[in-house]
Amino acid sequence: MTIPTLSRRRFQLGAAAVALSILATGCGSSSGAGNNEEVTLRFAWWGNEYLNAQTEKVIDAFEAEHPNIKIESEPGEWSSYWDKLATKTAANDAPDIIQMDQKYIAEYGGRGALLDLSKQSGIDTSKLDKEALASGQYDGAQYGLSTGQNAYVIMANTKVFEAANVPIPDDTTWTWDDFIETASKISAAGGGNNYGAAYGSNEADLIIWLRQHGENLYSEDGKLDFDTATAAAFWERLKEQRDSKASPPATVATEDAGAGLEESLFGTNRVGMAWWWTNQLGSLEATTGSSIKMLRAPSIDGSAAENGMYYKPTMFWSASSRSKNPEAASTFINYLANSPEAGAILMTDRGVPTNSEIVESITPSLKPADTTVVGFLKDIQPDIKEAPPVPPVGAGSVQNVIKRFTDEVLYDRLTPQAAAEAFKKEVEGMISGASK
Image (cartoon, rainbow, N blue to C red; front, side, top):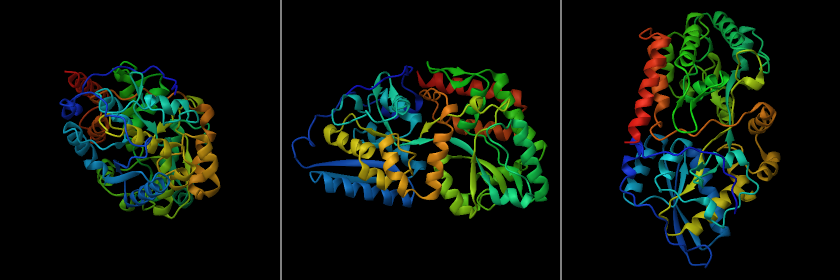
């Protein structure tokens, strides 16, 4: 098959991939799906109980259609998934099919641990979104197929807005000043119990902010691609949210960061706006018992076309390069990406499918929240720009660094400028150290 390849930068082995260093590059022997010989594939993924049950259901459906291929399940949790995968890969015991995250496509793919899916005749990419395909490419190889699209948005809790008698703003024209003003009004009406907005302080928050300023977190060649002044302005805005009481005090925010959704400020209807991924809408509505409205990111001048939003793959389907049954593994991945039966089971829980025919086929059966997500992603498409570059090797824990420096600013231990300079220096060290 032919896969259109967008330019992607080259990476070297990173610190997070040290466990992979004893892996000898090479592919497994081809066998399995094409000759009706019975084969067994191991399939690893992370998820909650609901996602695990759903995945088992799609495995059963695949096995019924392909009786010569058996799938052994290896479900896990995000917190321990990557340590286990690195250990198994280093021991030449990686699962055949791997649920992969974009942060590690370069890490594993560039080290020869993943199968180049573009060389597998059993995978059809003709109906998959081309940008989504490119997001799983590294150094000219297709190391993952996106499970579905996502977007990072502001979720507005209508119950909190109504209690504060504050109208939900027009997200096609609002600015950051409008965002802070709206949040401040909700906080004022909340009497110290409810707050207008949570702090957005993870990697996607910073990426959107930088893109609004014509910059990016990473460049195509794996370097940092922003000015410290722009990053300082990001933390200055978060500090303004604190000082204007648009957002909770630092102590409350810290406690909230460690809470589960059910106990969080947003989950208990005590905060009006918070950043989440679109595929989380259903869970948020179920937890809050409120109608949640998805809003585009505010922008500097009120232009939705300049708000820096992008489509992000929720996760990827990848295969081990050392699989003894690459043909069978590819057959399973193709089933997950292109089969209407699989689409009817997986729905949109791993993002809105990148196969437009699957989206069309499942739309009549979607839950109301999922229908809303599909419509929202379609509505914002005219303003969506190309996705940001894939994170370089060594950048896997940058999100934690951003959150740490956010705390430093909110507790007045560092100025925004000092935080930006220290952040840039630390991440540069992480990336350069990973190449040694």
